[in-house]
Length: 444
Image (cartoon, rainbow, N blue to C red; front, side, top):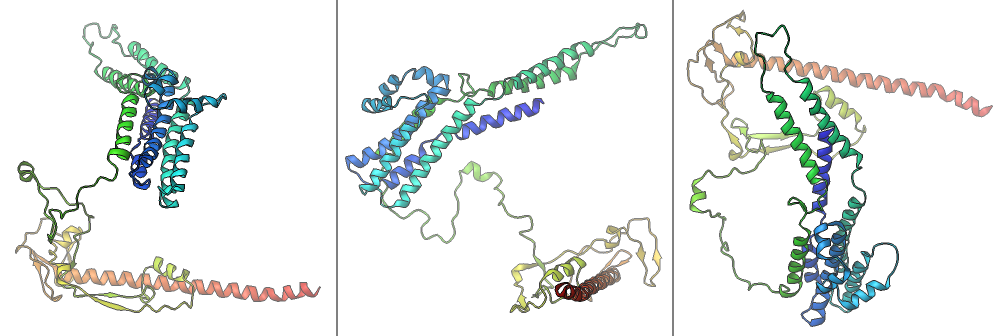
């Protein structure tokens, strides 16, 4: 119960932080789509960003105690410059019993529409993209309000806190040393080490959840709403005004004309171990050098296969023809490598030794290698003797076993095909027998 409570509180905390609202995307898109260096174009860009930030200020002062102390009234918001006096008059004209967060967003979208009508925004698509970014910003702020309006039920943290304290209250009594007649001459008192560890971990876990339960407070770990407001205002206005359409002169970069880009490191970091390139676990697997080509065949060309593959073929519609034909793909030398030979195939498989006469011999001692391991030769008739074992004969036995397994699987697949055909024929016979009954019913 404590773990579920802490997980829920932590998930709630991080979700609120992710949607708390960052003005960067709105400012960047406004600077890119609302074009012009005239005073009117600059006012459009600055006011769109300021109206979005005004809504964040109005919401934060209703959620965060820090922001409420900074802006106790709407007049203080006007004095701080987030709302103009004539805008406050328009704001006060709307009187009803609910919040008026939507009003500033209405102003922002109206400015976007006017900018399009005046030609400051070149395309309707740009209007859609910019409006969608403002909508996402508004949706995140709306979810902040929703989570504040519907907090965790008060009984839930109360029950969790009571359960943890009751558990350790019982531990104080139940885990004490009991002195009896049997242990009158023995000292069995000890320090409750495990109980102390449990107390530290459980109570610490509970305190973490209690600290994250209300992120809008004034604790050091709570959201810095005032800092976020100042940061969004400064960065947003810089992007749309002083940073608008100011790009460096185009010049060739330092890597111009290089066939291969070589990264630079500081001398100290270059001496350390280089990083490992991220790649798949099978990215460096290559074919054996004995393979010179790969034969690519259609799926239905090989008749002897596993029963599962035969069932898959049977599920494909009969009579379908394809223009895909068999192809032979040559293997490049760089796609091959030398494969190391088996050290002791029979011992790895935990199988008995097979003599030259075919009899089975038991051997308990570990065989010694008569020669160092060498790569597999490209000639399949080459013979490699490892200790007292004949690798060629072992490999032939393995091939025979595999061929027998493939033949058995092919026979089972053919039996399944015949059974399926018989079932289909039986169904067709039953349908043909039922047809006269249908004719009789129609004649009646």
